[in-house]
Length: 312
Image (cartoon, rainbow, N blue to C red):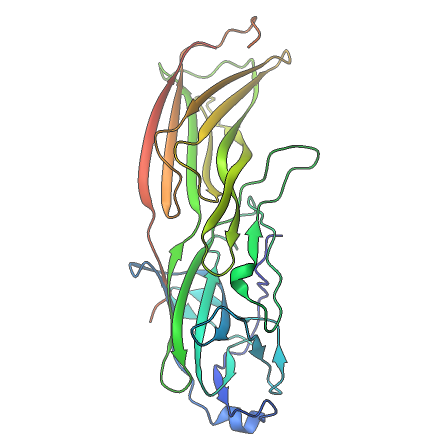
């Protein structure tokens, strides 16, 4: 589910071995240690867990990593990145001499939020990553899906002994803020028990190698939270797989008497990878009675939209 195989670890050592898979740690200790850095879109330092998945040269065929005994394993190299720099890791990248196609994947908010889930692809030595995918996780006994968690990707051609590891990461997920408030700025009626949102035309899957979305026909659901002064109901930084153009958004408002009211509208903006979209819905009355060297990641491209909701 919500992992990426991320496991906090200790000793940093990026080493190379000879072509013999049984190379010793004495040989490994003599190898140079390249600098490991990461940025987002080259504009800001990356913070968070980072997996490094080496593939065959000019290929998406995964070769796994090598442990301290020189044995090949299916587990990817792992680093925790702070301010663009790798902390010590016991699962650093270890490879025989050669040139590789490196895939980086990370989750910038992994250690600070627990709102998103994804079903992760399986990893096997010799497996083609381009034939695997991340997929949404459905709610139990429902046709809607959980939001994703924030994902960033990068690739690099890497030659052992010549290059340094550097991940210039970019977002493969979108982000969404939703705020509901009265058009006159007053507190929303206490008769409102809860609010939640459905967003349609969301991709079901992301290709595990390219990060490209597929099957943009699912609906993601998430709740809104009431502010202390009751003037707004909102949800911030909801991570989504990219949408098809003009996805349908539906706002549900459940009243304390059990009545559920809803309002639907297609958004003007597409929820594309790397975009942060802020939606503000202005209520115009609710009828209570009626039914109805540095690790970097690309910065978000911000876009916003205001919607006037007719009386419900």
